[in-house]
Image (cartoon, rainbow over all chains, first blue to last red; front, side, top):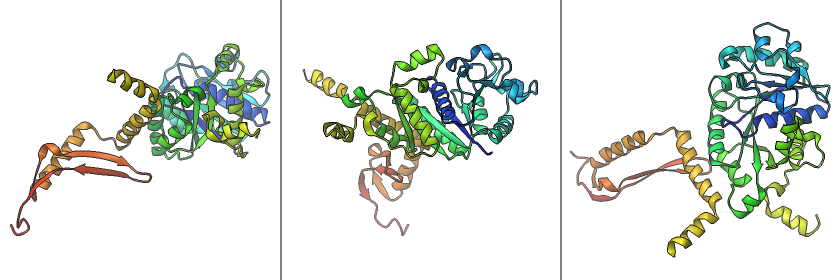
Length: 263
Length: 89
């Protein structure tokens, strides 16, 4: 089996990379796929808490790379989904504990046995970024509708392309439809045209995200969650399913017309 | 009063402001052109043009314009007088 390795990156910190990885991984596993999520943020690990698996860590990414354990020993199985695993980052090590070639080898190994390998990239564009990107065939760039996040996303896209990683898609996180309508937030169309990278999904701003990380249960488990539904759509598109973009998140013209005519 | 009106209109559409500002910022980031480099470029253009015509050195402007599939360098400069017989000398 040759699985796909996908890095989730952003440049700027705090835009929702870990939340995105946790939700996409969970959504893909719910579809029945075998998924491994790697936390590549060495020294600042967080995927474990977002997934509610912080109490089960014995070995980590650096232990695998240094040969202190077998790969499977560091893989923690999700509480609900049997085909979902995470490999946590080391919390007390430096970013240079892992080399890009080692990440490449590990990702290759994991892709042999799993359908999806999702890599949670650290913020920044230094060593940790290079490690996280090294083993990936595809990249998802996460941004929020703010100038700083978009600028950093543009920089990261340039670096990815320079690394010959050209399969890049954009996720816009925390879009606030009301603010877009008022003209106080850039729209999906604005951001896509600035970055000129194909869009794979838009996640609305939502308080549910905070609640879900408080609990350590990804939103895609929650029925009726709008942000969770948005992540599910992205997972489906990643899987090659043809999920139409409604312009609803954008407060677009079409959706209003549809609503008037009961469409 | 006028200021209040201006502020009202400016604050209404901060998304538009953000979009325009980002457009310029991204272009500079992508081209990796520093203000120093831009200044050097201007001086070189002035030097070359001055061999053929008298120009207003203070009027020169160099801007980048983003088209759909290209980036154009647009330079505007005021010509005072074109020298005669430049080619001959």
